[in-house]
Image (cartoon, rainbow, N blue to C red):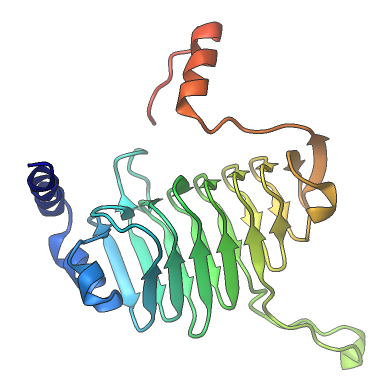
Length: 251
């Protein structure tokens, strides 16, 4: 009975969203047995410019565990179209929610990897992966952020006498990181676990020397405070909401 209810629920959700693209992306990128479970759900206003690469899902696979173009969390923006190019490899290790307007580009031979349950990518966020980007467990990326492991263009100093730097360098965002809206994370950035990045910051280096539980802010971002952490548990949040008389709302 439980399996039947889950099957009926999956069919209802599928029909309510974008059934053709949902079926296509699953059977185009996943092994047949995984595709049958429809783990990837595509919402309307999503465009796949290329799907020459592949998607890997590790661990338990369940229907509707990966959302692309979800329009249920924030109001419709001026750029609601989600645009994806998958020429390399995307690895999912658990459920994830990409809101409307996301732009995801994974180049040939590149790998974009996401951690386990709790990872969230906000609306109008751009992720451009030309080499390697690893995003850890329970990472929350809010709206209008940019994450790209390439500088796109070469820069020459000293009349061409200095060696030209490579265009790409791996990005690592570790577990339980909260990235504020309109943040840019550029090539070579390493963000330690339990970090908080303030809105409008530019992260452009390895911050491992500061350790965990730090607040970064500014352009470029600098460590502004240590010994802090964002509360990810909704149960804990509800306790503090009651204490401060705050009524939580959905955007």
